[in-house]
Length: 107
Length: 143
Image (cartoon, rainbow over all chains, first blue to last red; front, side, top):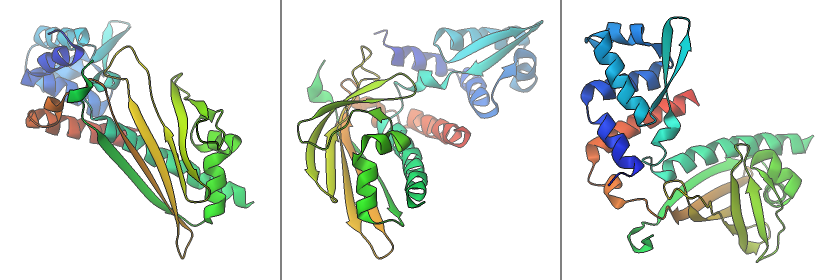
């Protein structure tokens, strides 16, 4: 099986990679250097893990001068996330907008 | 596509609005008002009417009005066709309005399934589930 889910699960099955991915989700875009400082492993090792995450579509990278910045691609998790959670978040936001609209309708 | 293994799931979002049911009903059924809080649309309050909801992200939902009880209930299909079954969705959205002392209680229930959403992801992989729950919290905070 080579479904997107399997690729994502495989790439996140390694605890170090999972920790790197969680950091990118939590703290936003980071350079390899900054990620290495806190990962407790060498920079080449961090780069290797990031390459696996990139192949799974979980992160993307951006070059700026000599620095490479990595960012989490949360859309890639869509196949795994229970759609009801996504939709609940969607409807809560829509209800906020509905409340705003109703107020405007008063005026 | 094996729909027999697909699981029907439901999401319910409820809120009380300090406005009369009649006003809420207009916001739910008049296209120019629907657009202001939901999406661009060609809705018409007629059972059997087919329409589209067009999201800012470019996605188009296929909808059909299933039931209308003016001022009380509105129900329509909410289908998202996508080549990738991980994103496709077939569902029904039902709005129920109940008058309250302070205004109107609005209940939105969406029931449906993703054609190939495997049950295994929901139950067996508990560890993963926790991981994703945590991520979703992070994502929700950032949104």
